[in-house]
Image (cartoon, rainbow, N blue to C red; front, side):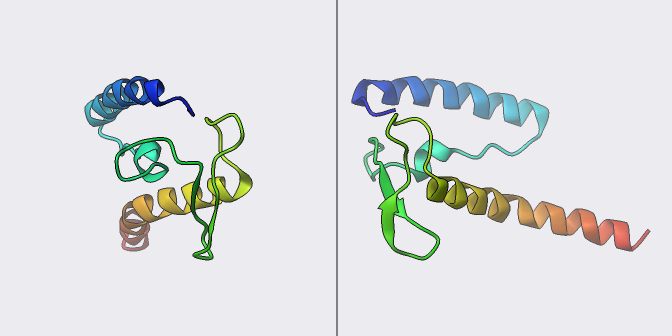
Length: 94
């Protein structure tokens, strides 16, 4: 999503997705927020897992590079880890 005018598009749909996640009682992970600058504008670069600044977005501006997907996977893992630990803990006590 390279064009600045698409920011509103993503904000609109993220509100819908977040509301639906709340209704379904599932977690919503806002990938737009973690891959843009402080003002919320498109940013193709960010920090790799190594800590080095790199390109995270693919040339089309929507998809991610391989490193971008690794960063997203880590984010998802970090968000879901507490829930997974709780589930595994409950299973081990049954």
